[in-house]
Length: 475
Image (cartoon, rainbow, N blue to C red):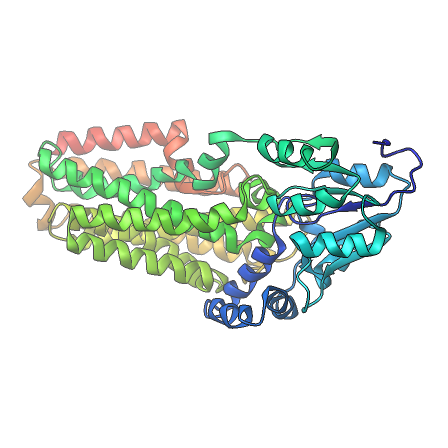
């Protein structure tokens, strides 16, 4: 095959989804519709009855994609820029998106795409290219099994982001001029996609076990462990779904753009399979804990869905919902071990986690301010809100300490602790920790997720250990 930089009269035809970009525009556009209204998924089913090309056209007419943010495969882009040949973008995606990509890159001389009547994939794409350039009259870069039909008619194949098996199948029907293998992140990429580090938050389900002094009851410990794993699976499923729905917003964020789905490191189709699988596994495990716990987990899942689709875009309500989601974990831990709900514990957690949720928003806004941007994408916040958020967040954290002080001075603490007065030492410890969290946020030293920060920061771990010592001495 003639190298890309040499003169060659044979056109270079390049696929879009999975080849030029590490994504799938049909899935992206459908997710965009679902984000606006989940019922749009049903509409896609009706459109599909008229054919795949018609469905793509209907979706494209209603869903916008910022092509400047797409995860382009720079190897393919460089190949196109270095070529002096006639370059063709040939894709099964709708023409609207294909022409937008071509205009953005400025490297294509021609665009062939689905047009609402003809779905330009597989045999149909091969036929279109043969009609345009003749059999063996073009080179084709692709990545999927459906591209075998195209390679069968091509002079040579450029195999991009494909398995070794597909490369062998391509070589059986035409000459393989070049192979650009898929860069595999392995298990580490999926660990990041599932956000296993976020499972740290689910340790909250053990709090009722500790607060009720049942740490040495094996049956209660086992139920709490099962509750922990169940919440972890459910949360991972929701994180995957949330990342799929937030592709464009994540790509415009300085750090979130590196998330596996936004960066194209994990196929979107795999995420669409993983999200429901994780959720079903979580619910099955929840039923093993108990019907009441399963109902609480189901409620948590519904609330997270509402947050993902709508509530996170409503300023201030989003932080209240985040605080509620943390508190639900404590409720779930209580239900799992069949213990009584504590008004004091729920009130304390609601104020504390509202403060941390506001820290999260404060940190995001501060990052945007440093980038010279004035508002968040789809969140309802502006950089000018920083002062108000800091005021509300600090106040909420101190209210949590006030609730703790009132609890210590109540008869409820006397029923569980022989020396409840020792618990007063918790107040200065928490006052210091909350003040330090906001101090770090103010200086731009806070992680995007303050709960993960709280569990990984060494000073926070020292404070937590001192709190554990105080609680133990008070028993």
